[in-house]
Length: 304
Image (cartoon, rainbow, N blue to C red):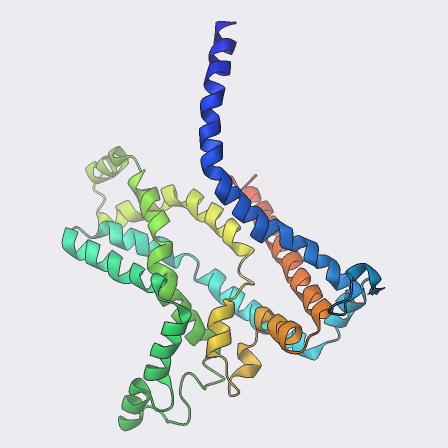
């Protein structure tokens, strides 16, 4: 009885935490749940200025059109190629954190972490300006490569159709690698130091400690983050691709998000672009559920 009374008296204090979180809950609700109502447009032939309930109901016609549209199939191909590359590069922040953890020189470690984290706070517009100054046909790097006979000014990286996948993936990793490694650094700080001491007593060096102590302790964090992020792999960076795409590399640079923008905002096909966006969301949800199922089958904890 006393225990129940104590719980009752402590409960009002917990509401302070709820009220502190309430603004963020409202923001998530407004920007993540309210727009879900817009999915209804994909089932109607929506006309701007006309109530959605006065528009013709078309059912799944726009979803059927997705599989007959050559342009969207090309965008789907490009999106999945970018997604596969990003999936393959997912362990890089974890390895980056391990390398930073092995640095024993304090000032060099802080400088390296700051230097690699700083690009995350640079907007894609600024990065596009830097990339243009360096890698355009009249850019500094292109000019040096041409002078040394290693390239051709007419085939710059920004205009190369063959370099789109790896060049854009490189820019994305350069921007986010240091920032994404922070959470792994936090996971490393939580590892029991007695494990390292025991490993050193057994004769393990830095590499063996990282391989047999640090890496296994970080795998659970890696799996959880991987599952959380895998649904976003289809969001290949609208700002990045939108800025970097041009007439020379459009066939490989166009992805789901830029396709939706062109069909919905520029061409005014709101219902069809909504159907494409909903299709992408369903694919992302399937990827999350599948990765969570695979993780649990492999003995990891997963999300649920």
